[in-house]
Figure: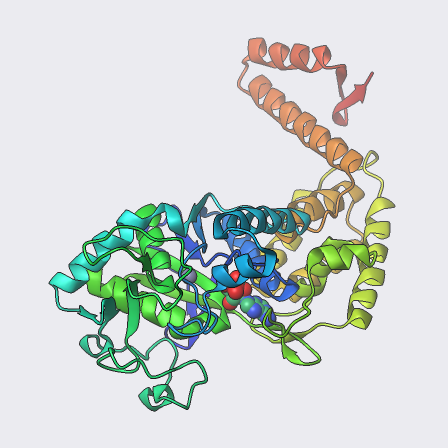
Length: 464
Ligand code: AMP
Ligand code: ZN
């Protein structure tokens, strides 16, 4: 598998720490509002990455956080608290807001066939973990206390700018919109690990800590949750490109200072979805949600198809016209698959391996989903047997998750595969003169209403 690694700014061979289990961390949503379809583009890319890794033979343990505390509108330490903003907007408590939008997010992922990660953990459920890390960072001199807050001291780490490729001058006040002068910081790039002096008098999410009652900064959440559930050596960390700086940059600084060694080898980022005003974002007022697309009569899976047609590292511009064309293409595709007959042919292994190899090659090439879709169309155009086609399409859909195979066809094909395997097993038993096993297999099939007949052309079957 080749993946673009933001850390080294190039495409690299993917080599996990442990060959049989890939650990993968993906930054989760801040649950103060609905996810917009831009956010969901990032989750679709991460879903494809996880499923591709599984498809090519890795086992994957994936963890995602739910940010329900500590995230400011600036992504740094300034601006409004996003959760409080949501609570004020809807006259609810932050806890109610968090619960409601977590559920809504989950529904959106289901509509888009995005697999829910193996481990999903709320930021507010891991406070002890952050306190443990911050305590050590203070002891080891990577953090300091000033004006009541605990800050990370970026001057103590080498390569702080490796991931972002940024220049320290970018951080001078006034250059970046979100940097307000915080006089307590030793350096403008320092960031808050633990807030005790809240500028929000109405902050209700607060916990005891050795430094006073307060709450964690956003960046420490992902380091803490990732290390707690996936250990000290992480293979892949993902997010959207806006997470590169400051979020992921700060995660690396604090995690590696805490651990004393390199933490994560591969950093993968999805590009943004834009609309005609630029990057789709919640701060720009109206934004598009999956429910809104549904209200307008669109199938959410068509939005997934629309995303897969483009490469995850390219910006994608959303328009209803392009979604309309994607709908037409998708419906045509499903129509063609429906017309394939499954009962009158066998699966040809050579053909299967040929096209499946091409499909894997596309995914292994830095998740080239548009090439993977081309392989799918090539299968449809080809003259290989119908059963082979259905088997290939149904396997491709384990990654694409586009609801390609109608349920009846799925059942037909699974049954066919089962019978073919049993017949093979029986003829091997006969070759080994294990007639007892051969008879047992024949009886097992008979019980299921499948009658096998041995003839000059080999073994055939009939379903009664
Ligand atoms: P948030 O809930 O704001 O923390 O964002 C959730 C995820 O969506 C993050 O990984 C962001 O990087 C990503 N994201 C935000 N805006 C966009 C966009 N316009 N297109 C694609 N991904 C985005
Ligand atoms: Zn994160």
